Image (cartoon, rainbow, N blue to C red; front, top):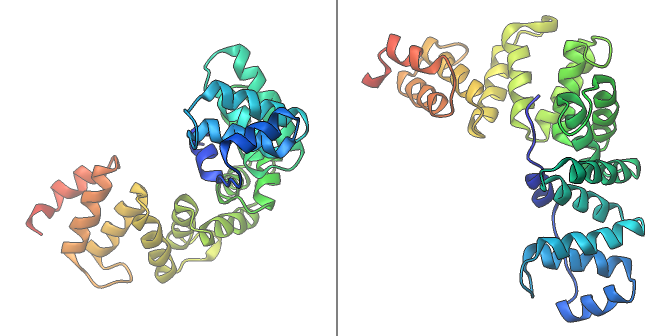
Length: 262
């Protein structure tokens, strides 16, 4: 399972502010939980004030101690960037607090950390628990990872029909890896679901988002005409993209089939 950048987790969750800096700061200093949260965001983004990560942490933690679930998540993210065991323990504490209150990104993060043994003990059953919680709330990354765990029998029993269900949920939300997984199932005929039209559809969706495996397979399908018209020019285009994105077989396929001619 790949590590998901926790900085991206913070930035992708979304930021919404409704007050100016001076009003927010005054309300925060008077103990208003939402104002403390907003002040943390203002310091984090540098909106209306100088950017100051330490002050962002201070105000997020003030709000987190009052039970604000988003502040708990954000302070966990920022502590996790500090890079020492002391701050990692603090990050884990707040990730757990946030996850226990139902924050889907916190649940996703704990699931990934538990799966990889990153920042905490490697524990596939704990990873499964948190990823399932997050997936059930609609997090597409968690849905993809949960599909993998059902497919491989990690932290749970192998259940390939349930794996397919979660891969498809993820793919339908636009997750490139989930789309690649569904494409692979349709292409290989896993579960007796061989359908090259559907495989092509999902591989193309995934390839357009930059997934190197999907780009390679799409190039292969265009080269040999797998449920599509042979198109060596499009094959060359996708194999080149796959190579540029690090696919290990792309260079060999390019050279063996002299795709520079197209």
